[in-house]
Length: 85
Picture (cartoon, rainbow, N blue to C red):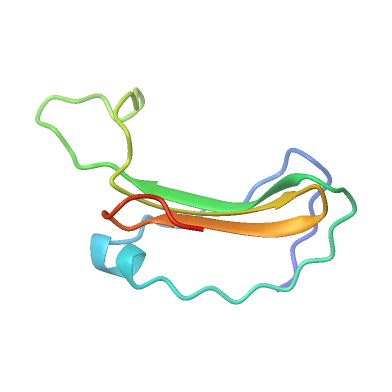
């Protein structure tokens, strides 16, 4: 499976559990046509009773992001101890 994107497309996968997000292993091969863009991102916010999941105003407590910044691949993460790169 090799997806191709031209700017605004995305793939959506089922949500990961907190444990899966803490122990995320990712292997990617990218062939970008531009110097900037998001490769992937995922975030987990704890649920609150009565909260509308469509309105995400709280900061995530677990997140992973890979992006291309001026032609360089940047991986950023926060698994509950502050952001790392």
